[in-house]
Amino acid sequence: MAIPLKEYFSTELYDRLAESLSRQLPDFPKQAFLNSIFSEDWKNLELKERSRHTTIILGNYLPDVYKDAIEVLKGMIQEWRDRGIEGHSIEYMFLPEFIEVFGLEQYEQSVLAMEEITQFFSCEFAVRPFFIRYQKDMCRQMSEWTTHPNHHVRRLASEGIRPRLPWAMALPAFKEDPSPILPILEQLKNDPSEYVRRSVANNLNDISKDHPEVVLEVCTRWKGLSPETDKLVKHACRTLLKAGNPAALALFGLGYNAGIQLQDLQLEQSSIQLGEYLHFTCTVSNQNPHPQIIRLEYAIYYQKANGSLSRKVFKISEKEYAPQDSIRIERRQHFKRISTRRYHSGLHQLSIILNGKEFPRHDFELHILP
Image (cartoon, rainbow, N blue to C red):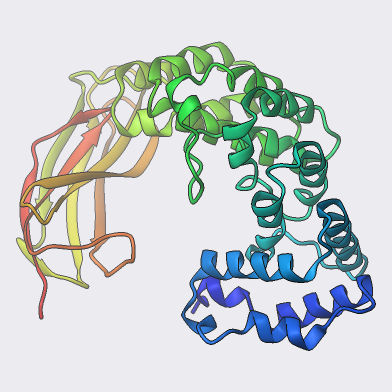
C-alpha cells in the first residue's frame, strides 16, 4: 500500500537536511532546527502544509541575506548529488518554495536560482507568483530557457507558464489571452526530450479549456511534422476529444457516420452498493465498406447533492475496425470511495460514446449504506 505523500517529509529527510546544513554552516544549531520542524502540530500537517512549514523554518535558520541563503541551498543540493541523490521526489518541493516565499522581491537572483534548482526539483510552482508580478520579464526568460542544454530547464519554460497547472495558482492573464505562451511552445514542439514535449501537450490542453480554437489551429499546423509531434498533438487534444469536439475528432479521422453502430448495451445490475462494480456489455461494429477508426468511450452520470447529474467520460479504446468487423465489449466501473469524489445515493446513468456520438443513457441506482 502506498504511503501518504505527506510522509515523504520524514525524520530521515530532516536528519539529512540538518546534517547538510551543519556542513554548509559551521555554527548551525542542528537540534534547535529539528525541534522547530517537529512542532506540536506536525503530525496534523498535510503535504503542502509540511512543505510550507519547512520553508518558513529554513528562513529562520539560513543567512538573512537572500543571495547567501540561496548559495547554502545550492551547496546542499550539490552535496546530495555527490552522494548519489538525484532529487525530483516530492519531499524536495520546499527548495523551490523557498524562492517563492523569500525571493519575490529579488527577481534576478531568483531567476538564476530557479535555473539551477529546477534541475534538482522542478520550480514550476515557484515561478507562478513571478509571472503575476513580472509577466513580460518572465515570458522573455522562458523564451531564453527553451534553448537551455538541460531538459529540466527547458521543461520549466513550458510547465511553469501553463494557465491551469494542477496544485498551483492559475495564471488569469494567460487564461484570458494565451498568445504570449504560443511562441514558447513553438520553440519546444520538436524538443528531443519527450519529458519536455509532454509538458507542451499539457500546456496546450490547458489552453483548450478556454480557447479550443487556438489549440485546434496550432495542432492542425503541427500534425504530420513528425511521429513525436503527432503524439504531442494527440495528447494536447485529449480534453477536446473527450468533449466530442467535432473539429478535434475530424483532425484525427474520428468523425461519426451511420456505419458506426452500437448494439445490445446491457447493464448487468440495475442497482449497486458503494464499493461494488457496475458491469456492462455492448457490441461495437463497423458496417462501412472501408476500414474505420472508432474511438470508444463511456460516460458515467454521477448524482450530485442537489439532484442533478455530473458527467465524466472514460476512454475504452481507439483502434481501426475492418469492414463488417464486430467486437463484443465487456467492462466494469468500480464505485469505490476516493478522496476526489463524493458519492450520493440515487439515480445514476451510463452511456456509450462512439467517435463523439453519445448513445441513449441507461439508468442504474447507487446505494450508500450507513
